[in-house]
Length: 303
Image (cartoon, one colour):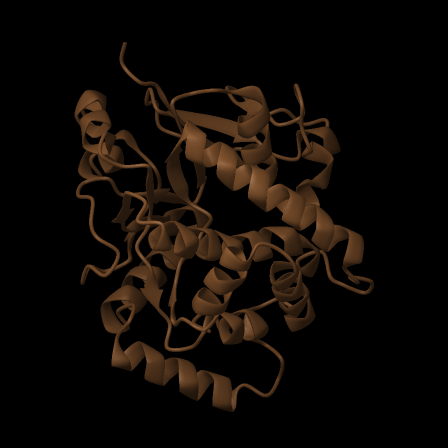
């Protein structure tokens, strides 16, 4: 019997999702609104944490998949970001970590290796997970978190402390990843069900412990998305531990759908990618200049 693949596309607003047997759009935060998005699953059915969506973001879709589905392969994408499956790489491949597309369409999926589905499934067979290629940021994970928009360093430090209290192997992986400048972005992945179960059984209790000890009074609505922000960094910790265990992991570029914000945003992102390629000296130099000159509290998207 052929293995089945379910990649959940987390959507907090009506969003285009191409028809494909592996893609399943899911409305996140469904319990917090009366609006229902046509043709989508909802994260407030079965066992769920839909009410936590304002802080957990796309993780409420991940929790729903963990508790309510048992597909052989399970993945998480965002309506703005998918993975490109054309070729599966090793972790240190010299490949641009993402590319810009207008919006998700069947043509984009064909370009990105989703067709035919049976060939994609055959590519997956040797692996336990497919994750984004790391992006060279020129600063450590700890430094990048501290200066990212709507992030507070104290939340990062609390999670560091929680990891220090736990399994020494997690602590060692965290120490390695948090001092690395090659970072994983997007909380995007496709995992075999057994590995996803392990990941979720590790991630969600850790976030629950963080929730018990956090101090977020006075945070803006954007800053209150903190559990989602932290989970993005924790995926890097989890992957670092898997790498030490010699797990079979494939790495692929991300696809960013900039056209969902309009044509101007699309061409701006395309131009930025051309002039300031990810991991380039030029991009790192511009980041440093922007950080140095930015004294108004408004952070650049390049930071």
